[in-house]
Length: 109
Image (cartoon, rainbow, N blue to C red; front, side, top):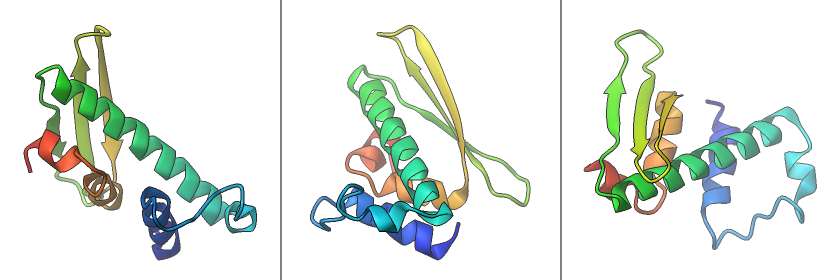
């Protein structure tokens, strides 16, 4: 992951950073900015589903691939919705996901 994109995502996660996509539209008006917004939204939605799974008494399954890409697969079962969600993340995205509140505890790490 590009270091600039990673920093933007971290700032989007931090409520005290003051970074707003409306106020700082010029920051997100390029390929890296759009990628940061996309990653941020994806990881926040995944964190929400992980929290819902944990609240229902479930535990998401984490598996790592053995290829060179180092992808991490997160499988979540939401019994309330009778659905399953499987997401494949890069190692950098997984590290960012773990920074979100409550995710580490829900994953047992």
